[in-house]
Each structure stands twice: as C-alpha cells, then as structure tokens.
Amino acid sequence: MVTFIRKYPIWAFLIINYAVSWGFLYPSYRIIQENDGITPLALIGLIGAYGPTIAAIIVQGVLDKKKLKTMLGRLLRVRVSCRIYLFVIIAPILFYVVAYLLGTMVLDGNLHISWMAGLSGIPIWFLAALPFGPMGEELGWRGFMLPRLLDKFSILKASFFVGLAWGVWHLASFSFPGAAIPEFLSVNVWTIFLYFANTIALSIVFSYVYLKSRGSVFMAILLHTFFNAASNITFDFFAETQNVALLTTTYILNLVLAGTVGVLLVKKAEKRGLKKII
Image 1 (cartoon, rainbow, N blue to C red):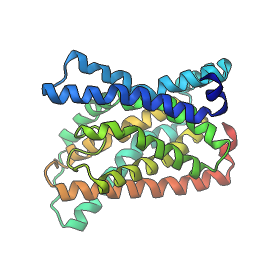
Image 2 (image 1 turned 120 degrees about the vertical axis):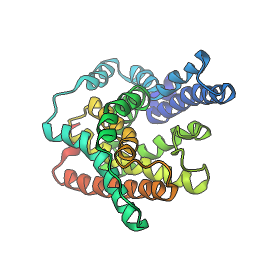
Image 3 (image 1 turned 90 degrees about the horizontal axis):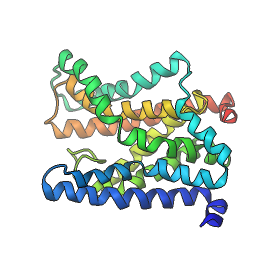
Image 4 (image 1 turned 45 degrees about the vertical axis):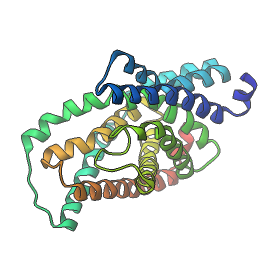
C-alpha cells in the first residue's frame, strides 16, 4: 500500500477518499430515510463527510511528514487581502442573485423581495453549511489534490480534474434528496450532468481564490461555505421555493455564470504567473 501511495499519490488519495466517504455516507443516508429522521447511528455520516481530509492526511503523511505539516498549516492561512475576502463572501451570493434575476426575466416571473428574511437567513445558512462539506472536504480537494495537479497541468485543466473528482465524490449523496443534487430536481442523467458541470465550474473559481490567497485552505473552506449557502440565501431574499422552472433555470444560469467568470479570472491569473506561487 505504501509503495502504491508513493507511486500514485493522487489515485491513492481518491481511492481512500471514496472508500471512506461512500462507506459511511451511504449507510448514513439509508438510516435517515428508514427512520424518517436523524438518529445517533446516522451520525456516522460525519466520518464520510471528512473523507477527503482523512485521505489527504494519510497520503501526505506517507509521502512526506514535513510537507504534511505545511499542508495542515494552510488551514490557518488567514492573512489574505481584503479584496479576496470580499470576493469570497460576495461572489457566490452575487452569482446566484444575478442568475435568479436573469431567470425571472427569461420566465417573465414576478419579483418579490424580502429584505428581512434574506438578511436574517445569512448567518443561519452559513453556520448550517460550514461543518459538513466545507470543513470536511477542502483540505483534500484544494489542500492536497489541486497543488499536485498544478505541477503537471494548466490551472484550467487541473481545475477540471479536481471538479470531476469532486463530482464523483458526491455519488453516494445522489441517493438522498437535497444532499448533492438540489431537492427541486429529480435524479436522472440530465441532472447528474448538470451537477458535474456545476462542480467543474465552481472548481475553476476555487482555483483562482486558492492561487490569489497563496494556497489558503481556510479561504477555500470559506468560499465553499458561501457557495453552499448561496441558493438558500437568494431564495430567502426573493421568497421563492415553489417555482421549479425558475429554480432550475437559476441553478443552470448560476453554474454558467460562475464558470465563465472563473475562466476569465484564471486566464488573467495565468498571464501573471500566479501558478508558480504554490
């Protein structure tokens, strides 16, 4: 096993990651569904949620314990420019709000704004999103996998591979409504394609932030949290939870918008040689 890890570190990371995550997440979802609610036994899913982190620590520990310490230190890399903090906090919500407004225009819907519900919901959705995907995943995706791929590929190609692996990681979550694919969408070939397009598009934005923050996993966690919370925050602002056509259109427009902005930012970053700072 040690030989395999040293020879194929990324594949070893993915195998361990998927084995841990799927091995705990899928049974957890089944327990919740069978009991119609969360039971103490269902909390084993938390182990699965941290599969990327567990795999990254194991593989990096085998490869180089000194670099493991450096990788873990990126979790505390909080000294980043105010511009990046503003981007991380505002961009995910702005993407979704713009996508919603465009969707409303396309479908000729009515616009209702609820400022109180929207503003009051921001800290709630943020705290609800933080402990699961963001804290459990980012040390793996952006702390371990992305830097290694950047040694071999362009930023866009590396982002594509991370986004693809990120999408595959969620396969077990497709069995539970709303855990990965939004609850207003049924699980089929089309929605799975959309989900993979979404993880790849967002992965490009993540790569940009990771590079601009000089490898901060902390910023990746923060960005992941706001992306996870953005749809709920937006729907609170516009008091919208029922119009499936509008929700679906917004979801698609958001991934297109995020992916487009991400590509433009990454192209600019490549011209400035930001790949070399990691």
